[in-house]
Length: 224
Image (cartoon, rainbow, N blue to C red):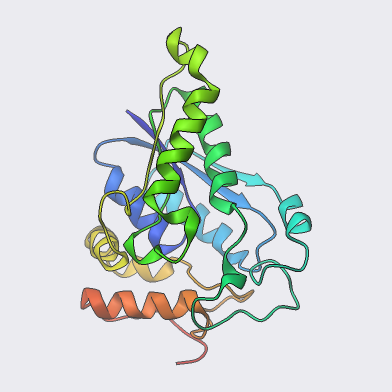
């Protein structure tokens, strides 16, 4: 069986791919959408090779940055990135865009699973919740319903660790079990830097997950 994994090179998407790889052939898809954290693209390339993906695509959708204009802290250079959850880091329907494109590839590859790394701790993000993925699954399959009925397409299921009841620390334990210290090469930071800043909301969530998983965090942070 084939799974298309939305793959940022971050801890959540890397660990999601590891969780699925025993049951699926993994095809990774990474998006360059004008994010400040462009270092995640090189992390995605690195881990796609380590995890031996069947294919890995990096898709350029930088035009999305223009659509978001000055509304989002992850794409607008003059907005500060907060240290805890704030709606300025909710990128409008980002996961809907990612998952729609990933599902188009899934229909073409006859893959029956599309996965992304949303987990139980992502509850504040509307497009990470299981209700969102259920509704989007229904909409995308309806958009290909004739091909599905004719046997030309496989019905897709959008899955996330959140749907599976997994937290960020649950995922971390799974990933660390396979990767060991390579897990520290995953990229979580929202800033445009070559080192984790240690201050943004994502870095703080990363630190917390290591504490909850009882794993010593050897990530290099600019600010401890």
